[in-house]
Image (cartoon, rainbow, N blue to C red; front, side, top):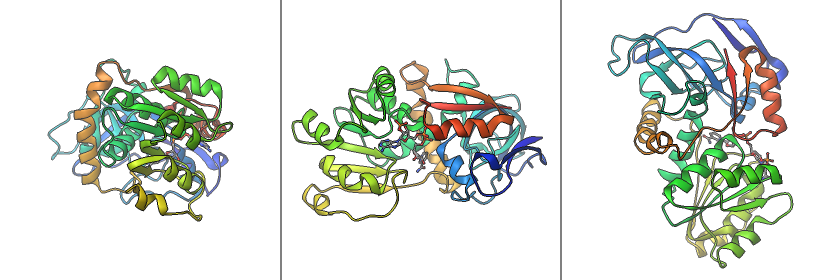
Length: 325
Ligand SMILES: NC(=O)c1ccc[n+]([C@@H]2O[C@H](COP(=O)([O-])OP(=O)(O)OC[C@H]3O[C@@H](n4cnc5c(N)ncnc54)[C@H](OP(=O)(O)O)[C@@H]3O)[C@@H](O)[C@H]2O)c1
């Protein structure tokens, strides 16, 4: 088969479209012939040698895909050859085929095309396992997501709104903020022009937001603590603003805050299966009734994965960028 190979550590230029061996069918796995794979910021870290491939996963980038099952291991009962699926991957999405644990597959939700479904598994599992399974965002609460126009943000806005939260988001320009508004965001904050803590306080009568999903790490840690309400929960999923710094921990005690972080990729097969199960139960109905949709910005042929990653790194996109084998 063909796949995108990381030829040495570096930026998108190190990616090459090459002939590679087909994946092997292992117990508990299926082989998916890929219809589309979605790009994540983490893929660009993997190129640079900063995002380890979990044991047993293909070395090519790509954390989510959709496609058709081509082979099924003898011990897998839940899926059959020909089923159309989308999949949470530990790697290997930038390819024509991938081997996936059967427990990491999801059916294509009704109303979503096979291709567009590629943009769901990684963002949905990330947001559901953090904001909902861990930080317990609930109806009537205030929720702030940074980077509202990102792949993660466009989904987080929609599902938080669907659950009944009031949604605050940050983004770097007015066009992106307008698209966040269309997706359901209530309070739009241009992080280049406004202090998000001040705005959050104004909008909440000084109380702050209950839950924050953060991709910035150190750069925003103090401001996130300041923007949270009593019993607020901060979930950190990225370090785009660095991973070390100095912070006044006072608000954690005085406001009884919870600060957590997690990466999805390195979790065990069993834990990811539990998250996938929860997503099927709690998120798929929201997708199937049309309240939550994958937001697809642009597609590229698989061979042009480097151009697709370059586009992601410009941050011009809103939502997901797909690769088509
Ligand atoms: N822990 C996990 O398991 C996990 C899983 C998936 C993703 N992530 C992380 O989640 C983040 C989003 O991933 P993605 O693939 O959806 O990325 P993406 O589409 O490339 O989005 C990156 C976002 O960062 C925003 N941003 C940059 N500087 C900012 C600032 N100062 N304040 C607020 N937002 C800022 C950008 O907003 P503008 O374009 O408006 O500047 C953009 O929306 C990444 O950090 C990624 O590593 C973590």
